Amino acid sequence: MADPESHRIRPGLTGDARGVTPAVGKTLEIGLVVLYVALVTTVLLAGVVPEYRAAAGAEVGDRVLVAASQDVERAVPPDGTDTTVERTVQLPATIAGTGYRIRADGRRLVLEHPDAAVGGAVRLVLGARVDRVTGTWESGAETIVRVTDDSDGLVVELAEREGSG
Amino acid sequence: MSRRRDQPTRVRPDDDRGQANLVALVAALFALTSVTVVAVAVGNGALAGETRDPAERHAATAVADRLVAADSPLTNRSNVIDAGAIRSVTAADLRRWYPVLDDRAFSVSLDGETIAASGSAERGTTMRRIVLVERTTDTTIQPRFRTGNRVTLPRRTPDVGLSLDPPENVSVSTVRANDRTVLHDPDGLAGEFSIDVSRRETVRFTFTANGTLEHGDVDLSLSPRRTTKAELVVTVGD
Image 1 (cartoon, chains in turn yellow, green):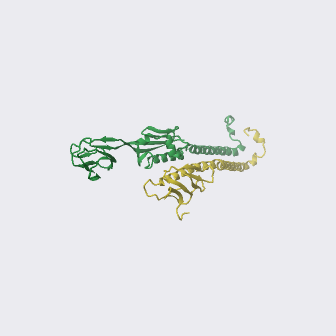
Image 2: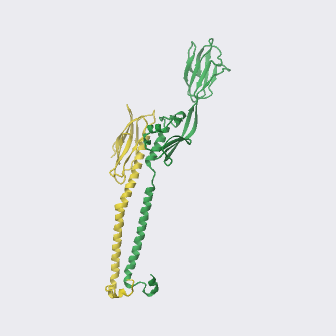
């Protein structure tokens, strides 16, 4: 093509056929752009974005779990005070776009999420007065932590406010 | 390129015109690709640089809060640390009290002096709490009773150990702390007594007796408390 002699002897693109060139060029351009967009979209949506979503979800999950456990720990009243406490705990409705559960397991809070990358458990730091931790939180509900007095010690319960979804 | 410079009249052959656009397009797409790649790399870096470990932070905060709480084994009351208790604490004690420290490096220090440490936690999360360190010193005084049968305690203290040993001819019937009668026996008081007094006022003991008390007749043992400010630092690492 760069050779000035060669294009003269090639048929099709000489003389009256030159009018087709813009159409062919535009078609090529459109094809190229469509291919490019498809390629970039595929790479982003199939590889990068889900990976980031999972990574961000895992980080958010860790923080939600830690924030929840701190709320639980702070709800336990100091010794010698009224031991019936109800405190609202703010939890995000979804992590990585899906609902989740936080449940008590012994003296730990466990985050349950459909995505395996999101989850974990955190050990609660509670005084010896606390006998046990029970209950489950479903995300989206109005979650509260309730501390009541029992014969064996304090009972910390993960609960939902009455009448909330 | 050099050829075009050599032949300025044929800069762009006729059938090259469509491809000139394509070259521009490819260049644009290449630029777009570069921007995308750079953006993804920056995002990746931001995500990878997010190394703050919330669990570590939780452990440090929780342990620091529990250590200064009123029911902590180290405190006399909220935010007041018992100097004797904190001197004797070990890393094993802390692990036993706070299982959240299992498998983690941590150190607890008071005013820069490390009290208990396990592993190397320099790069961990640090929580600081301002506390009072309370020391109890035991002192005994023997009042001389130069100005009558009364004595003013030199320091405030929560309780006083009183040892009464009056002479044969003297009978102590009543002991008052300020205006409050704390001991009374019309037949005469003698022996060891423990008296709770207010820590918030200066206490003067008045002894009602049928004679004058002498130096050595009464022993008072006090346990005054001295508090100093200090900074409790809890560092928890991986």
